[in-house]
Length: 499
Image (cartoon, rainbow, N blue to C red):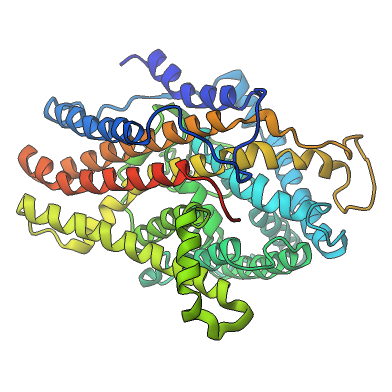
């Protein structure tokens, strides 16, 4: 495959993303209306499942032909536009903007209008940052590693401390390897609970308080263990964006003083780095080994976004009605208790299904590799599914509700300002109609599962000794992928009945 072709293929997802973001006259999906599929539901499921199964056959053929490891990349570090974007002054400017946005959001939460619709904090946090940054990480690259406000803030504090005392601030205490990313697993569950369960999820003041506590937690961790170590193991947003950026067509690899490429993510600004363009999704196949805690983190990430969608279906509403009596002892918190139960159950069920598929595949392949090692190695194959469902679930939400930021930029505190004249802007809900939202959801889920099947095959081909072992081990994984495809497509085909 030529480099030119690689470049075009790498840019294709980015082009598709911007094309589907163009406005079309219709009505919005995601506000409770029912959308009748343009084809029978059975045909819809059969076609999607057939695509996933066919991908299994194609990947098996590719594996047999020995084409599994051919993933060309092109170094574009010297391109004029890339040089401009990667220049010191441009990066510093973006970091200043990031830090300004951080303080603006926190300040707005504390002193701004208490109405979430009039305050920039909820919209920026839940739509622009959480939803939008994941889209950018998967479709473009890990720009979060350069814009993370805690890194910028820590560098400012560290620089000031060094000027004042002529000593380094960071203690560089050895991080316990046994901890891995387990602190991030716990922290991400708390974040998911806040997003999906907490009744004050949109309260600006409460959000600012949480941000301050989390910022202090992050800065203290960076102080003791160093920025890179802490952000790589414990900071949930850095870990999440790093995972999703494995799909992206652009990668940034810092160069160490020895002129060797460092494949570890570096959250400090580096003047010398290699910027590559690659085939979309090929970052999943890097030689860097995952840790067991990262596998658990990925399962939690996928299950929580799936549960968020499932909790908006009529089936969940019926479950809530049936199970309410069992949680009535919680009083006014009964509904929160039910949803917390669902949030805990979702990763347990997904983890059990995934581990079972790996266990059966191990038995079919007849290998003695420890089950825990296999679960860790194959967990990265779940990542494209997590990203695909994020796109399917939040596509309409980002493009419709995200428009609120246009008015809020003019009046971030809800005080009646109109700094840039856009305070009276109203979101255009016709920008995404139900048919487009359904099509994007269908395509993203199917493509995500196909990439997951492919990455799982690549991992199996490197783990097991023969082609026969590889193929046998992947049959249970294919069944799992098909089952999750059906579940995901069923969820996005349902009318939204609750929020």
